[in-house]
Length: 381
Image (cartoon, rainbow, N blue to C red; front, side, top):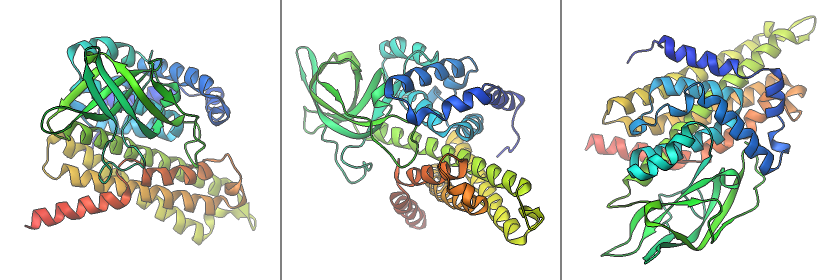
C-alpha cells in the first residue's frame, strides 16, 4: 500500500479548499434555515463549481473507491458536512449506479449533466427503516404495454425534495420469482409523491424526506435491471458506507482542529488551557483516534481497488471505527470547548449531532459487526 499522495491528488484538495472563503462558509452555515427550493439552488451552484475541479467525476468508473477520491472526500466533508452528503449522494451513489449498471442510453441521457453539476440525483433504497438486510423491498414494478407501473414507499431519502432524478430500489414481477431493479423516476413523474422535509438531529442542511409511488408510469428504458441477484443493491449500500466513512474522517478533522485552536487561544489561570495536562491528554486521544481511523479508511479504499478478498469486511471495520471514533472525538472537543461547545452553531456541537447519523445510516454499526464476525468465522472455517 502506497501512503504517498500524488501531486494531482494534493492539487485537487487545494482547489477544493480554495473554493470556500469566509462569505461562502457563512452562506453554507445558513443551509439548515433555508427552504428546499433555496437549498436546491445552493447545492446546484456548488455542484457546478465542484464540477469544474473534476471532483464529480472521481470514482465513477467501475465504482472505484481509490485513495485520491478518499482524500478529496475527506477535504470536502471537513468544510461542509451537509453539502458533502448532498453532493456525494448525487455524484457517487446515483452517478455510480448509472455509470456501472445503466444502459448506454441512460448514460448518454444522465451522466453528462450530472458530471457538469446541472442536475441532482437521489437513491431511495430502504423502506420502513434504514436496513435492507432484514427488511424485504416491497416497492414493485409491473410491466405493461406502456412500460412499468411502480408502487411502493421509501423512508429517509437524502436529496429527495431537491432531486431531478430518484433511483428507487424495488422488484420486478414475472418469472419464477421477483427480481431486483432500480426504477429511475423524474421529479415531475405522475404518481410520485415527495413528503415534507424531515427535521433531523444532525446534517440539518440536507434535505431528507419520505417518498411514495402510486402506479407511477415509467418507460422501460428508465429501469436499471432486473438483476439475477442482489449484487447491484449491495453495491449501492457499499458506496453509501464508503461515503459515510469519509464523512466521519471529515468530521473528526473539523472537531480536532476546533478543539486544538480553542485550547491554544483560550486562557485559564493565566495560561492557555493546552498547557494543562488533562487537555493535552484529550487532544492526544483525539489525534490517535483520528490518525488510526484515517489509516484504516485508506486501507479499505486500497483493498477495494486491488480486489482483495477481505476488502468487504475491512470496509465494514472502517465504517464502524470511523463512525464511532467521530462521536468520541466530537465529545472530547465539546468538553475542551466547555460552555462555548454547548452553544448551538460551533463545529464541535454540529459534529456531535452529525456523528450519530454515521452509526445508523448505511450498514449500521450493529449489522456491520455481524458481517465482520461472519467474515472471521468464514475465514477460520
